[in-house]
Length: 345
Image (spheres, rainbow, N blue to C red):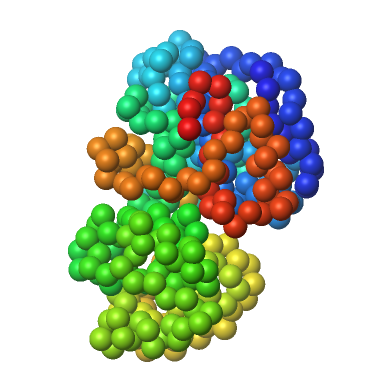
């Protein structure tokens, strides 16, 4: 089979490697589609400290079960599945208290170990979840990023009536907006510096948009919320200073929640007074937890607006186009999905 392997920063190879055989508790999966995430781009550029090379990237993986190990009981050949990327120990404090996504020994497929940019893939049966055969592969590859929206909005305790502010309208920002509207948010305000991205966000739940390059963000939020501020804010822009902006600017109301989604390691100037004088909650979120099955079910039932969420589809046989776009970004490319043989865009 063919596998796409990053051998060192800015270098990749398509290698012929043996098709993996499943262990007793594993299933073999023929890959059908895989999403391209910003983290894959960071791995290619050598910017992910959790990754070492050579590495097969890809954590947004869906495919068809082709073989099952002798101890497998839940899945069978022909099942369509989405693959969990979180590999956890199951015994640490976090795992035994329902927080396995931040397991002490957490390992992530496609980042800390080989992922799905290959034609066949073996995983433990417990890490593959059956999905509806009716979901097109091009959409199924987006189950993983949709779980991020479901998990982060659960962490942010979004409930009906909330007024939400979202900084950054890339793929994750628009997914968070959609998740908030599904959960009953009364108003969703999206903020970015790109008018095209802001207009696109309206397809996915934004009621109001603010261009922070040309508008006074605090003044616009005050206008939209009649001076009350937002009850919860999500930082999906994740640039140095973005968290401070949400904490210090009068964007979030007293007792509001702020959920940063990024991993910027640059120090920011936030004081205890910034948090405590208004009793703000700063809530971390990482990957997702227990969201695969409900998210796949919501997709099968048509709860998500999928049209335009992925903008670009690339055949696995032409995967060089993915890397070309990483090196020479096209503003029109918002989200790319890799399609393997047998999957149609």
